[in-house]
Amino acid sequence: MPVVIPSRHRGPAAAVRAAMAAVVVLLVASVGLPASTAQADQDIVFDGAGDARQISLIGDSTLAGVRWYDDYGDLRRYNFVLNAESCRRTVEQSCISREGYRSANVVSTMRSLDGALGELLVVMTGYNDPVWSIDEAIAEVTAEARRQGVDHVLWLTLRTSFDVDYSDPQEQSSIDTFREYNDQLLDAAEASGGFLQLADWGAYSFGATDWFEYDGVHLTPAGVDALTGFLAEAIDRVLAGDQNAIVSTSWTVLVPGAEGPTVSAVQEAMIEAGIDVPGGADGVYGNDTMAAVAEFQRRNGDLQVTGAVDAPTARALGVDLGTGASNADDPASTDDEPVEPPSADAPPGEVAESAVGTADAASNDIIPLPSTPATDAGSRLMSGWFLALALIVALVGAVILRRRHVVARRRSLHRP
Image (cartoon, rainbow, N blue to C red; front, side, top):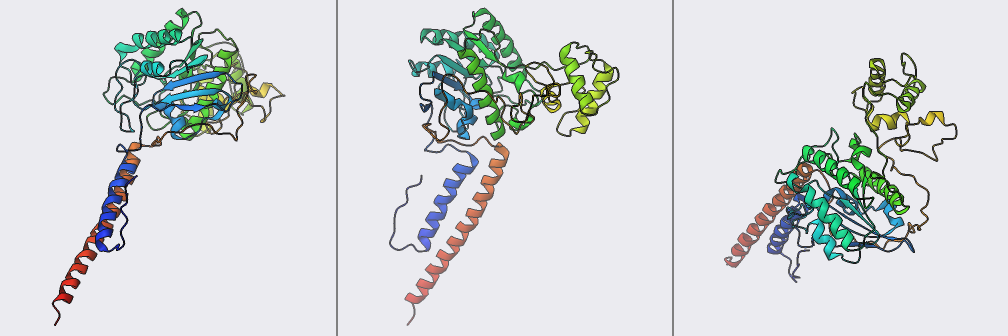
């Protein structure tokens, strides 16, 4: 915050100084330049979940959305420490963040939290890592977690959906890097004996464009709700002893050539929606089924018309992403007990209250950081300059007033 020096006589000169200070402050706030109140690598601690088990979450800006929007959702059912920073890398030096500082990398952050990581460490990072550091990153994180006595590491897969258009500031990462990261994560998880688990955020969020900013990786408010619900369900499964390499719901995109009960469920859902499917629900994804899917997507303007059943199309059809069953087949299914959210506006993962305890929704022991919301950089820049322009106009007006004041004073001094 700027320091304001009080003055008994707030004349035109004081107005000029105040306008100049306001220009500087608003430029910093709206354009996104480093603010003096921003502090690097602060830990957000929540201990309002009673006897619930202790976990930790470390990530880059793809996780930082939960603190930028101050919305921790279903994560409040656990006691946790969270440290999420923009431009963070896993083992290499981090780049300078949108908040104006260079954060510690993931492994260094883990060491700074020695003894506080709890039973489970959630990792959501990798989007700024160069491809040559991936294997080292996975190995060092898991080794440090073992050293600290953590029971499991739960690592979120990276997004590789068609809407992803992110590269780190030094252009050392891209969607191809993210695919390689996922492959190496899967190999490491399978070789870890259950210590490293994967939460398949990449598959779960495929095509859910409303959850993300223009770059396809940073969260919108709807995305924060989706992520926290998704994480809570995956954490529940790991803490309950699930030993699968991938513990989260995953959806494989259906294309011509696919066969089986999932295809049948999709065909049945389309027939229920009034779409003609030649051959009926035969469980074979041929050209006729592809054409029927494309017609369903055309009738639902929010879907991409591809003829393939991605996760958003499956949601729109009411097909359970976990089992492949159509909700229309289950007469007991109701709006009060959804298996999967019908749209990106509703948070996923409506799960039963965990046996480890639930935080009181009214309690708030989270220590938030000074932060900058994850908004479109171009819009922030434009709005910042508009504000600056308005203040410059005010500054010019103050200068003119000051000049008139000086001229009038001089004239009064020379009057006979």
